[in-house]
Amino acid sequence: MTDQINIDLIDQLLKDYQSPEDVLGENGLLKQLTKAVLERAMQAELSHHLGYEKHSLKGNNSGNSRNGNSKKTLKGDFGTLPIDVPRDRNATFEPKIIPKGETRFAGFDDKILSLYARGMTTRQIQQHLEEIYQVEVSPSLISTVTDAIIEEVRAWQSRPLDSVYPIVYLDCLMVKIRDGGHIQNKAIYLAIGINREGLKEALGIWVAQTEGAKFWLSVMTELKNRGVQDIFIACVDGLKGFPEAIETVFPKTQVQLCIVHLVRNSLNYVGWKERKAVASDLRNIYTATTREAAEQELERFAEKWDRKYASIALMWRRNWERVAVFFAYPEEIRRVIYTTNAIESVNMGLRKILKNRGSFPNDEAAMKLIYLALQNISEKWTMPIQEWKAALNRFAIDFGERLPYV
Image (tube, rainbow, N blue to C red; front, side, top):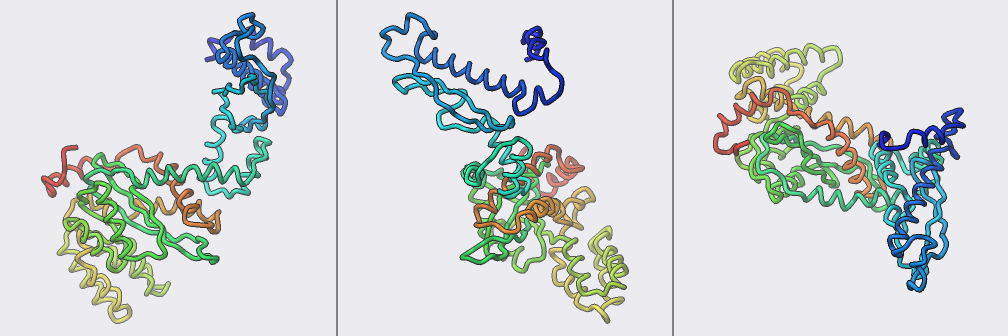
């Protein structure tokens, strides 16, 4: 800490200071001090290892002694830094401050991972580190650093989960991945839960050839194997067979189809001139105060638009039992379950990062980036969702013994 450092010493070091370059530049004071402190620390470590100070008579006939230095170049935020590493004759000394074989200073790997998590390619990371820190980093080093995250991904993906999640959002996005010599769109499955404290939690990431209800069934099975015993409400898009896949594993779960997805799909049938009017009439359905009122609005919609767009009302009627789940709840719960926006916003953040990459060489490369990006996104999930206490009280009434004590 600065108040423990001799101020006179700092003044002496800065007596020739004329510009920031003198302190922060390639040959500036900060870099020289870093080199001096590291080398002095390693000399102190060697003295402790040998059991005597340099030039001490205790070293005579001790069986081991200093044996000059070896050269090493460190990479870090300070750029490249050549240092002298002391040696002993028995080759038993291994510095702790810069471990044997280590060429990257503490925090440098984190810098690479941070850039990777923002969607930068290997070439872009190389250029950035060279431009900002004057450090030349090989593609193999970047791969080594990012590959080390795979074990962390596997541990995270298999970690135990809570027994109950009142709400879970399930969605999928497509990513270009090389497979068998060809680049193809693969499905990245995501599950985001709202835990009993009202906090968002990424439950897992899965990669598959395509999005399908069969794979979602395996996802739900994995969640159950990792400790999830109950989900009150699952919010999903309109994929065929999706609700049934969820209910096979969690038979008590209520499945709410995303209204935003349903409206979007409905408007695909409508010409541009009439989209605003159709959207307005659809809004009367899902903003109705009760299920009965919503059904009446659906009938009015059909009477008005069936002649031109009969498939829209038919679509809503076919999915009505999954659409109308949220009408049984008060406004504070409706707001968080009628749409998969909670996971759509995550997907939007991921897409911004993924678009820089073009395609991935394999599934693991895609998993690494999405995992790191999710970690960055989830750092903001520090507060419960809006009006969570009111929603939790309602869940306690409606689901009774299924909600363990919070």
